[in-house]
Length: 250
Ligand SMILES: [Zn+2]
Ligand SMILES: [Zn+2]
Ligand SMILES: [Zn+2]
Image 1 (cartoon, rainbow, N blue to C red):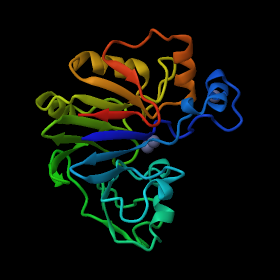
Image 2: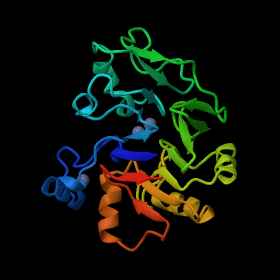
Image 3: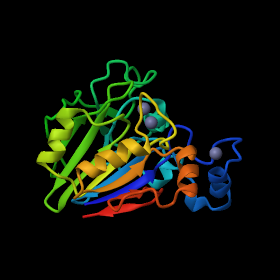
Image 4: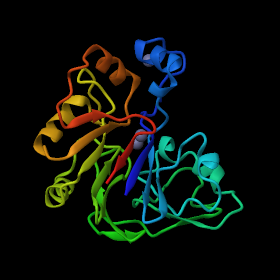
């Protein structure tokens, strides 16, 4: 099982248009430090499962026929914007697994094109895809949002964004099935508090409570990158900063 982080930026991405902070300047000079919007692809048992759809080169990265399914965390535009072109494709239908959100995003449900929206997933009700079990986990965000625990014979990876904290029932699942990796929303530095997203203090506290998992930060703002440039020793041993293209392999 291999999870590739296609993007690790928050809604602003990095470099942020017009910003001359050190993190944005660094991302302009060194594209390996830039962050696309937050999404990932899971490769397992010969299948490719896209987690959210927003990459600017999505169609060239994934030619027709190469996406076996799409699993959505939620319908905020920064997580689904690539669906708006993809849906008009001339290709086999693509199954889209989703949280229970009657609104969705704009007119996606009215004009799905090749997207086959599946019945909404229920929290903690495992389903099977590509011969692995996937457990949807409730998250705390301003739109109905699910995280996912991917369970293969080689190990488990949790993908948890967007969220502030981890609701208790989801936390209990993580305790019952401890993941090898937890990819987690860490949008802000400890200096910035939001009602929708974790900051670094929130994540360090969670990582401390589940010390045997390796925690990988994603959905990162330029503000957090800037903070980490000034505080490079701030992370604990089981926490690492995600990067676009990073691969987690089990
Ligand atoms: Zn987001
Ligand atoms: Zn900046
Ligand atoms: Zn969101």
